[in-house]
Amino acid sequence: MSGRLSGRIAFITGAARGQGRSHALRLAEEGADIIAVDICNPIESVPYALATEDDLAETTALVEKLDRRIVATTADVRDKRALSAAFEAGAAELGGVDIVVANAGIAPQQSDEPDRDAVFADVIAVNLTGVFNTVEVARERMIAQGRGGSIVLTSSTAGIKAVGGSSGAGIGYTASKHAVVGLMRQYAVLLAEHRIRVNSVHPTGVSTPMVVGNTALAEALADPSNMGKSISNLLPVELLEPQDISNAVMWLASDESRYVTGVVLPVDAGLTIK
Ligand SMILES: NC(=O)c1ccc[n+]([C@@H]2O[C@H](COP(=O)([O-])OP(=O)(O)OC[C@H]3O[C@@H](n4cnc5c(N)ncnc54)[C@H](O)[C@@H]3O)[C@@H](O)[C@H]2O)c1
Image (cartoon, rainbow, N blue to C red; front, side, top):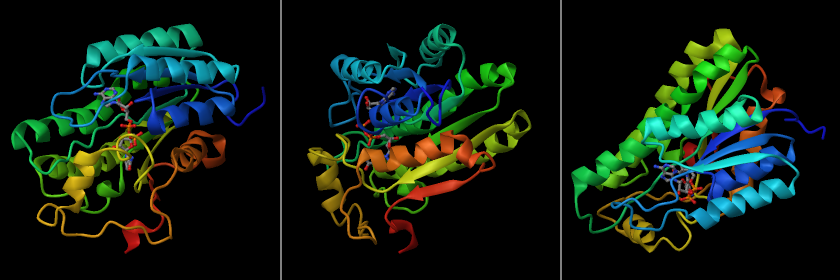
């Protein structure tokens, strides 16, 4: 296979469905083998269903159909020890790691929030500490290999503008996604000497189960006391497709962006310049 990522290995969190699955398939199409991780379990404060074991099995089958190898494990990005074990098993089997995509995240906004403090803490734990854990478990091996690499952190338009809403979940979402930019910049500085690049992607609304069919989020965003701000796109499109984000991730992962590091890359149909 002679794709743009031929011979590379990509570690992707939240890979059971949605954007994470799409990233796995897009990178595999370009020749990458995949280390996939997903929680495949609910989180109490999250009012919509997270992925299942069946979803992760489906990602596995789809990657294998592309003739690529995949090691898929159930692990929570909040649990550094379990995440590290999942990563290490995959890296040992596939031959290391070249690309990290820290994509797992939650958006538990709802109108009647049962416990503002608990939900804030959960969003920070998954969307910020989970991203930190993802880079931490992979970076030493990446450095030791001496073959450079690319790390892509999934933020959001809520990592650029205050569009998460005023609930505990909304404030936590905006704060965590802004904080991902801080992680990205600090790791970009830290890892540059090892030819490891670090960038963040900032999607506007994407057609995934986090949004589609998530009535709790729709109600929270429609509630003027919670939001008060329009988050419509500039280009005439309501929701992007996961592949739109995967194409950006693939470019950041590939040598076509070999001197791009420390960059905030919106894939937002113009939302953040409004
Ligand atoms: N969908 C959107 O409109 C949108 C917009 C901007 C940013 N994002 C971000 O994109 C990323 C992907 O979201 P998506 O749209 O594919 O939604 P999604 O809910 O379909 O996918 C998220 C995946 O992450 C997994 N996950 C959640 N918590 C986890 C944990 N603690 N450990 C391991 N896995 C966990 C879920 O099971 C799920 O498979 C998230 O970081 C999200 O915040 C989404």
